[in-house]
Amino acid sequence: MTDGGQRGAGPLELYLDQMFDRLAGTGAAGRRMLTEAEEHLHEAAAEGRARGLDPETAEQEAVDRFGEADTIAYRLRIDNSVTRIALRRVTLVAWAVAGAAMAWFGLSGGLTYLLSEPWTKLLIATDRFGAHPMCEPPWFTPDIGPCAGVYRMDVSLLPGVDNGFPYAVTGAIGAVLTIALLILRRTTVLGTPSWTPSRRVVRLVLGLSFGLIGVGLVVEAIDGIFKDVQYYVLADFVAGLLAIIVAAVALGWRSPPGRRHFDAVR
Amino acid sequence: MDIRGHIDLLLLSVLHDRGAVHGYAVITALRDRSKGAFDLPEGTIYPALQRLERAGLVGSRWDDSAPRRRRVYELTEDGRRACADKKTEWRGFVVSVQAVIGPMAVGGPA
Image 1 (cartoon, each protein chain N blue to C red):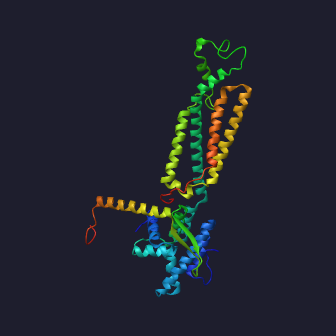
Image 2 (image 1 turned 180 degrees about the horizontal axis):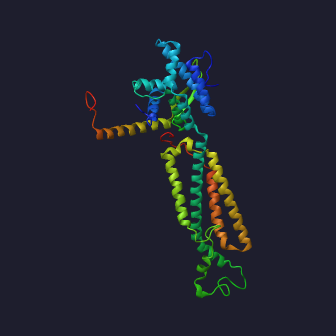
Image 3 (image 1 turned 180 degrees about the vertical axis):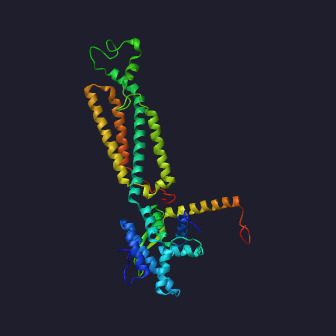
């Protein structure tokens, strides 16, 4: 249809043609808008005729009150932008993943640090170096400090980074990001459907990414035990098992029928 | 009167009071209750209703029982709560503004 109009068509039909053109590409929302516009305009025109207006004047009045087709199509496009909604949802998923990843990495570093002392003592107690025990020369001389303390410094706290990595700060930022997201989802527009990704997508993204990383780290840790290269085994085990726990929680997550209470999307 | 920014509250209030109604009835109620004071293109109400629906505050369905197929809207549970909150927020706003500009003069504008 075009703006050129059709011979004999009244203002209402011409307007609907115009709106049809303006709504091109808006999909289901546009089709619904067109149906509602048609219903509305026919009802408004009927009301005008009931007030004694002639049919053409009644239709023209209904069209005038309804507003410019351009304005309405613009509002509809703004409110139904598929790209905008997709970007919002991707942003939220990225936020959730970043928060969870940073909290996981920080917690892994902290837990590994706490466990590194008993881990080192266990290594010394189960020393398998035979003729040259770990805490005796040539591997170790007492003048450099307590044996367990010295070996503990060799334990990697995190996979893939050195021990200078600020895991505590990273974990704190991750926790703040996660808590902020949970609060904002309950109190702001971030909790609305146009910002809310499919639960299945969130579960799959978190479950698969953390699950694969977790399994990979645990396999590497087991491999390290057999190769007697224990300095990274503890970090791999801790980070791997934590990642598997995160994945399991994500995959088993069922959101409660919670409250979504906020202003509508602007 | 420019009511941009207040459409959500107005639509939620109408739906709260009228129950399940179609778009034309919502617009008629807005016009009648405001005595025609709100000068807005009636067609812009439909995108606003769709937006409220996506926000989970309004539900809708096609009603095929009328001679012409039309969409019927009604508040969800979240919508009812949001409506109450927005009313409280608005009344607080009005009280605050009046405290600044002074109460309405009786018998005409101040």
